[in-house]
Amino acid sequence: MRISTITMFEQSTASMNRQQSDLMNVSQQIASGRRVVNPSDDPQAASRAVTVDQAKAVTEQYSDARISARNSLSQTESILNSVSDAVTSAKTLLIQASSDTLSDVDRESISSELKGIYETMIGQANATDGNGRYLFGGYKDSAPPFVKQTNADGDEFVVYNGDSKAREQRVDASRLMPVTENGESIFQSVPSGAGYIAEAKKEDGTLNEGNVTFRGPQTLDVNDDGYGENFRVVFSEDAGGNSMYSVQRLDDGAWEAIDLEGDGETTYPYTGNDQQLSFGGLNITLSGTPADGDEILVAQSGGDVRGADLFRTMEEAIRVLENPADNPTKKADLRNTLNTSMRDLDNALDNVLTVRASAGARLNELDVIDAVGSNRMLNYEQTLSDLVDLDYVEAISEYSLRQVGLQAAQKAFVDIKGLSLFNYM
Image (tube, rainbow, N blue to C red; front, top):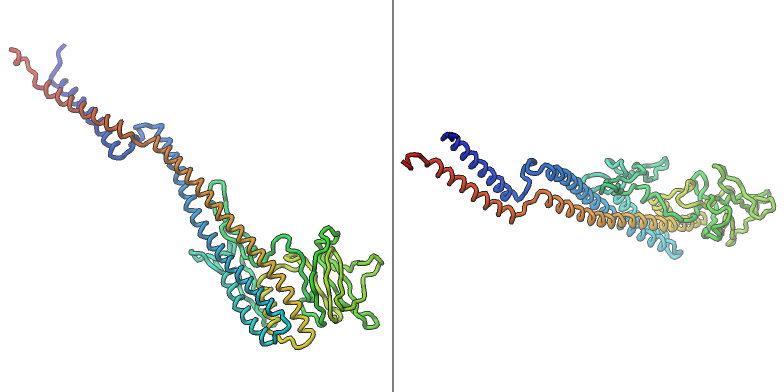
């Protein structure tokens, strides 16, 4: 068999190209630090690496989402802390204003301080995050959730224009977390078990005309059949001009007088000297002289009959402190309104602290999710490293071997192309 010169050249060139290609591949691996530079290097490992890379990208997105959620919750917690301080300051002022030694001028001065706290609360309720969205408007976060309006008498009051939902953000694959609170849950709610509250007003919202004052209500028996219902004490006059009272219970939207003593009667004499009334597992103490038609509501705090509203509480307290208590009716209104407002503020403070604790618990939960996410990222990094990263010791050994192979192929080619029969003749 005769081997032509061109065949020797082609075989030698192919050998050198193959050795050089192998050397270049190893060089690329060393330069990039990766064993799998191209998918063809290890198709199975490359495919698994793509899946792990995608999982890493999703985990990083959740990590960014948790940063945003933590910022919102931290700001919410900070504002709620300020609101609780404001409520505490308002309660302190009302305790001071309830002293009989103060003059009308003194109470008016306290009213001015309450106005400042009131305006501060409105500002806190309309706080925004770093992106200009209102924190406490729920999903209606493009406009202030709490807005002042004026009624027919020229009195200002605050209304809530947000929704009843809390804005949520997905912070992990299996966790959709509320990152803000809506205004209703903070400023127009009470904690569970807030109990009863009394208010000396008629059903149409007008003030009583007599000077009856109340203490309580106090809970006597939560197992009473009537406990949990809403009541009101209604005053009237009999044919002889004597003061009478009846206790009515709200039943299917209608007020019905109840028989307190089991004798078939629903109207009883009112003595007006620390008279104690017991009904529905409650007790309330009344003093003073009522006018015909006066009412005292005894209702579940935050219920349908008397909903909770921190701003309304502040407005009522400011109103009663601004007006001089220069007659028995106004003095009774002052005492009753302050008693009601202080109970409302106690409930409001408990509610704000409850919401704040919830925000703090979610911040702690974010820390736990962050720790889990960090461990997950480490696992992904290790898996990815096992799939595509380079073993430098093995690669450098391979590189040295490929160099020797290339040099050998080059030397063999030089030696072969110089052979000739004339060298042996």
